[in-house]
Length: 90
Image (cartoon, rainbow, N blue to C red):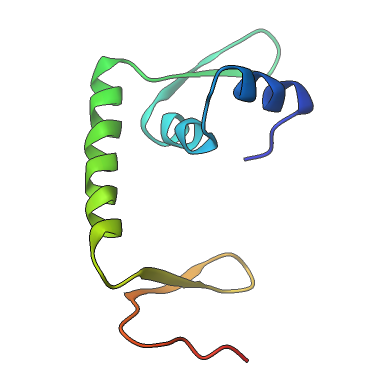
């Protein structure tokens, strides 16, 4: 997600994490604003789904074997796994 300088400043002032914005965009909804802008919001039910997703993610990161994924040059995720041995770096 690309943020303007103004948005970065507001995020810092309001203690907002970028992941929060991504979650609102994924689980929430938007309303049209004047021009071509969209106002993204998450209602109570959508915020509950976000919290459930965060709890599931917490489970992913509490496991002893780190989660990883491989991304191709065009941005597609090729595979996902858990690291059980050292990754060879060339």
